[in-house]
Image 1 (cartoon, rainbow, N blue to C red):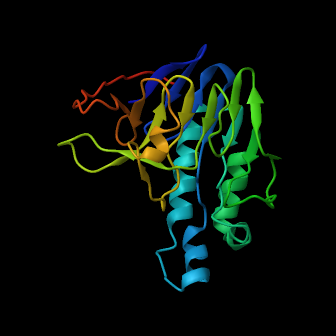
Image 2: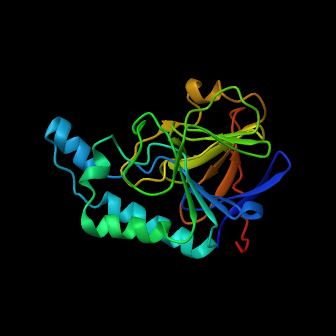
Length: 231
């Protein structure tokens, strides 16, 4: 599998090509910004009809990552549903799929700006989750060794096609890409994101394989390939 492992503090983490983060030492799979039922929310608020397949696609991808890693814990970093009403609009098939993914493992829902209230699904609901010296939350703060989401970062390698969702990290802060099928993105070099990092920042692009490239300096980056086993 074409994943990319990197050191974050004292920990070894793996960015999966799907946009999920794997922490093997804790058997923890982390995803951010699923935005389930976005098509329903868009239809309710604007009347625009989008193909209602994003929830199934996102849950299927999550199921593949769970089958690959067999996590003891799944941590959702917020904005798991597109708004407070979205969970109620989940169809029977998608509800069954989500319930089956939760079975037999610890499931943590972190609060996001789209879904600040409790959800009608099992699991533990938290604003912030701490594990050792790592802190997980939806929106980045000034905390060291912090893992967050929210910004949906994307980056493109010149001459290599369009922008892909990406992880961003400087070794002190890590921002995950949006995992959901219907999600836009913010350029990795946008001042809003650049202002969150103090050290040398790298982007780990998702897609068929995870590709790590340094940011900044106006120098065209050379892709770094790394094939590793998950278990």
